[in-house]
Length: 185
Image (cartoon, rainbow, N blue to C red; front, side):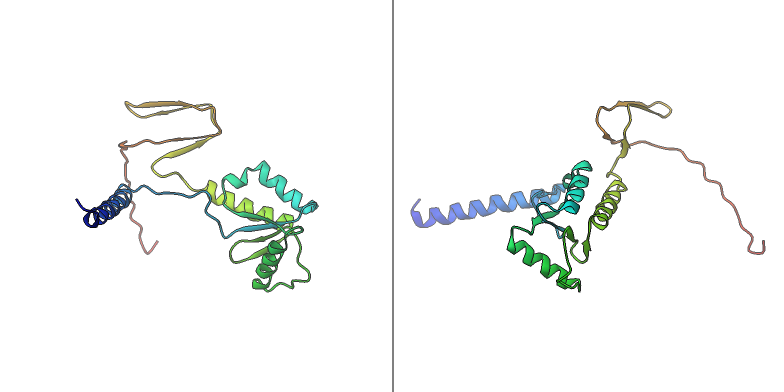
């Protein structure tokens, strides 16, 4: 095989492999997630700021950074970050002469102060906590739990704070009662 036909053949094979991988991923429903993907949420803070420290302590205590994706930017020692914070404040219609840190931009809104920012993250965490896992039952903070049906018993013991148990192909009999309501009553 000469060089003129060999190079296009390699390129064609490489493209075919990439296409097969792409199609296989989309057909199997595999979703790729990039933990380094940046969020619209940006928390601006200043080194030595006592209110920023309150927010930082909350974020660490609640392990927020592992649950919610957001950027943190220091503004006292970084002019580019300070300029970005000013631009976000302007987009919210705030007077840029009176903004301070901690300052949070959620992609649309601006929040200033430790209480509002902590309330924001609490609401975000509550939203995450209310989501039920796909195809399963989420059980939190338990030592031993037994689920029983006629011929099935599932016992679980957990040493972690949260455990997800997936139960599939379970039939449940239900009784439906019909009630007729009179419109005149």
